[in-house]
Image 1 (cartoon, rainbow, N blue to C red):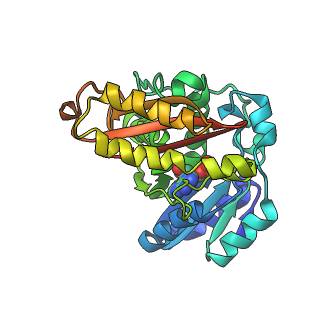
Image 2: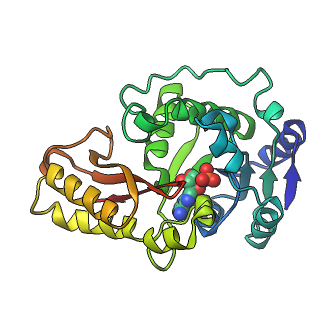
Length: 280
Ligand code: AMP
């Protein structure tokens, strides 16, 4: 596997690939890799001749400095995992490489209501940072296909909208959520859970699954109240639990109002914030 830290070196390598007409799949990550990330790499490998993974802990998407500082960083392990997965290239840029013109460069996309709900409501500025970094990384890598996880459902929806509005020549592909055997969605943040919170955390997925069942007979409002209570009773602090339309991300008042409902939740377990979702 090649590891590039500078974008000039990456560009030189990419020029060679393009001259061979090779298809390129791209998996952007923030590192502390786990099986969920590797599933994206494998999907890209199945669809493309070359797979590029990036690891960049993007400062502009953290609305709290302490979260940025506490974000796990395991570069040695990440490189070993990517080599084991036979990833072709790892792009490991510095902040200056990604943001040569400074951190406050904005991307001109109108997200409408997409970034005002769910995560957007609780993490102001988060999606502006995500849009900014993915735009920049797409610019540098210019892949044929971009792989992102359903785990960050709202992020996927927003990046798909950015690609559509900017007419970027890249296909975006959603990969399913990879879970621990007890149902907890894999996340780099899971390593920060205390033993007690780790034991409690699988209730998140259990509640999402049961909500899907309950929604067949109860209104979204009733399901939401039930779910919030379940999570609280388990000792977790839910920030939101919403049944939304899978395209617009707007809350739905009846299941029949939406072709593709999604239940999305964000929950604090101790000082770790976990998100998860289930598509109905
Ligand atoms: P992150 O490093 O958290 O920014 O995640 C990088 C990519 O991996 C994003 O597209 C995530 O949605 C995806 N991802 C994170 N966790 C999982 C998971 N458990 N299963 C599948 N994809 C995931």
